[in-house]
Each structure stands twice: as structure tokens, then as C-alpha cells.
Image 1 (cartoon, rainbow, N blue to C red):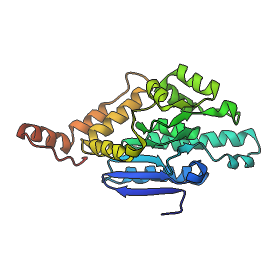
Image 2 (cartoon, rainbow, N blue to C red; image 1 turned 90 degrees about the vertical axis):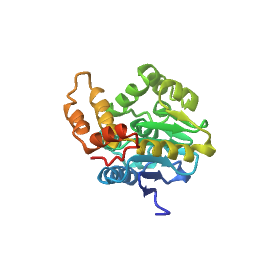
Image 3 (tube, one colour; image 1 turned 180 degrees about the horizontal axis):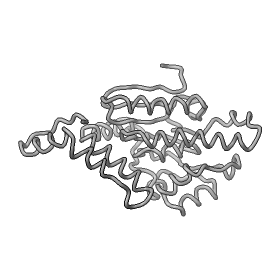
Image 4 (tube, rainbow, N blue to C red; image 1 turned 180 degrees about the vertical axis):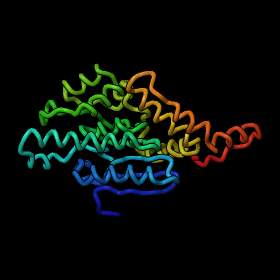
Length: 258
């Protein structure tokens, strides 16, 4: 609804969550983190949704981290540990969404905003966008293990050390070269480009995409992961039988996701 800090829109086959605090560069409040986790649950329960898009309102930021004013209530180191634990839970939930996720980035993606973008499957940004976790020159805190590992897996330890040690923000071009960005598109076209990308993905076999995403997650923990259930998910499905029939009949397949 208008006036809320997050807006969830369902328009099958897509679902979109907009972070809606443009006056604060979409800095995340505790309620916004909960709304993100709730949106992930809604997407996973909805058989008609094939792709989930996360974006920021206003054109100046995807999300400029957490709302720092909330940290004034911290009384001890344990408060910080609990905060990082909660952020990790929410970002892990975003990473675990069974549908493909796209971060639509226009402007700053800093701190938790960068971490959330990294948890999405694909990242599309405008040329003016910037990325980083500038805590070494701002708050003096540190990332959780989960957030740090996710960045390392995506762009490598050298780039992560550069980002964290210097506290600087990477340009969109530099972020793409490091492996953080999937595409860079002009600001005036990002809405159209992301929708076209999402619809192209949504038109493909949903179980193939789901199995691929889950397989890659398991393999990130090391080669040799058991993936038999994912093979069975695809090869035992109605969609596989439909795909074979459609291919032989030279017609487009009609995917059902089962």
C-alpha cells in the first residue's frame, strides 16, 4: 500500500518487493527486514509466481544499509551479535527462495543493501549505481560469517578485502568486472529490461530452474553433494514428459511446474 516502507506486488508470473523509504535511501528498518522475509514466504507459497524482483524506490538507492538510528539502542556486544544473526537469517531466507530472484539496482547498494543484492540470483544495475560495505570508515562494526562468505563466493577474497579494507564503493563497471553484476542498463530502461529478463526466465521450465538453483547452493559447500532428489524432481515430473512430447511434436512446451 502507498505510504508503507515496503510494497509487495503480485503480478503473475512475477512478484516484486519495493523498498520504499526513498527519503532515507531505503535504509532498512527491523520492520523492513521482516517484510522481506515475509515476502520470500509469500513467493514460495504461490505456484503462479515464477520470478521474484527486489528493488528500491526513488532511483537514488537500492538500499543504503540498515537504518543506523536503530543502533542507538544497543547496550552491549551481544546486541550486535543478535543483530548480525537476524540479518543473516533474513538474507539467508532471500538466498533460499525457490524462485529465481533479481535485484533491480538504481543508485547506492551499500552495507546490508550490498549484502542483500549479493543474495539474489541476478543483479541488474544502472551505470550510476555503486556498491560496497563501508563499515571500516563509518561504524567500525563487521560482517557476519554468512554475509562475508556470500561476498567471497561471488567476487573472490581479493575484491572483498579491497571493498572492506578501503571502505570505498565500487562503480557499476568495476562491480561487473568483479562478478557482482549480471547486467548494466541505462536508468531509463532498467524497469523494462528487468521485466523482460524476468519474463524470459518465467517462460522456461520452472523445475529445471529450481533444481539448478538448489544444486548450485549445495555444490557451493563442496563438490560431491547428493543431488539425486533434484534429478528425480525433474526427470519424474509431468514437465519432463511434456518437454519431450513438445520437442518431438515441434511445438512450444506448456510448463506446469509439476
